[in-house]
Amino acid sequence: MTSRLDARIDHRLDILLTALIRQTGPDGTLRDPVQEGPTPPDHYAQISTALALQLRQPGDALSRKLLDAWLALPPSQRGHAPFNRFLLLLLGDAINARVDEQSAIDAALIAECLSHCPLVRHYPSNNWALLAQLCRIMEASSRKVRRQAALELEHMLDRWTTPAGGFVDFPRHDAKFGSATPMAYHHKALFVTVMALHYTDSPGLANHVQRMQDWVSFCWDGQNHVGGFGRSTHSLFGDACLLASLILLDSDEQANPGSQGPKIITGILERWSRQSRDDGLLALNPAGQQGWDNYMFLSVYNAWAAAIIGWARHSTATGKRINAHGSVFDAAPSPLEQDPDAGLLRIGAETELLTLLSTRGQPPQAFSRDEIELRYAGGTPWHVIHRDRVVCPPAVRSKATALLERPALAGWTPVFQLMAGCSDSPNSPASRCKRLIRHTGSSWQARPCRYCGLPHRRHGND
Image (cartoon, rainbow, N blue to C red; front, side):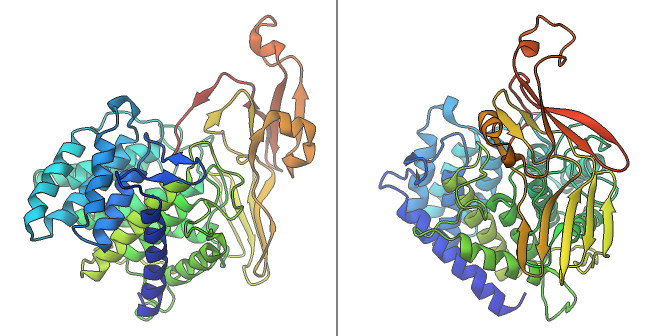
């Protein structure tokens, strides 16, 4: 990577870390400005901030206070165990690299923290399962165990990617028609796979990296946006995963003139400059404080970005190179390209008019009694750019009452309100309430898809 781009990344990291430190109290509790209180305890902002601080200021006492504050939480309040475990493992590596009197004490603190975030067999979404498997690779007790863990990750990616390379976050069974491919979590799957290559040499995983990079090219608009379909639309979480992946893959424009990596990093950094808040933190998407999912928190995603991008920069700066087995990021999408299994279509060129479409739609990952999920609709554009101007924003998830009052919020999506006929039993509570369905269609097929009014059931978040 060019030193100029390194400097831009480091500058953004400095701003982020400074902002996070300002939000951290003397007792090590991180504050969330939007929540106007402590960062959600069941997430991973505390550990993320501790890692980001340790990487930039090794041995800083505030990093320990952040860990102590997390340990002080009642066990029932802690959550996101695979996220916290992953971050703690990276933090442990950073501490073990130090040679000072405090490092042994800090290592013991990490060990205690790890005991509070064990891994389990099943997770609410596939991206969680991938992250847990990465932890198993990182913690493997021998080369043989690590190879077996890496092989299992490879098998998981075999099941959960479309033939074109798109990551399937839901459902858990093999990828097929009817799978959900939210692009923010494709970026996370790429990050997990690249991280696995940091710990083990695997041609199979490198092949998946190549396929997933090609899919990133498919959904990049050539400017500032990579993605836009599905939940966590254009989120800081997905952006951070993608940037960290590209840094670890050592996207060097001078060594690889055709590489898209530096261009994507530059484009996202330019967009982030427009998302920067007065307090130094980044808004969670280009829409400011709109379009956030209910699991998105300002402190959490900013801390995550500072941690994983900071670790990627630290790793490459210390000379660690990943063996990607010839994987290159130079695929140039054609003017007409699609992933038929995901139902996504790309038309045009980023130099003029580029349109990204959902053809038949995908199943929402989280139904709700009172919210409308439009982001997986079919027969609709989800990103349109004319030269460097976005002319079609992505669809949203909104309150059902808001859509009933203002139908224009549905944008391109045809919506019908039904009073009955949604249940086999006319006496069921579901048939007595107002129902909203999404009608998805294309020239190949059309079908109705429920997206509101079902019993509240979630299939995972970040």
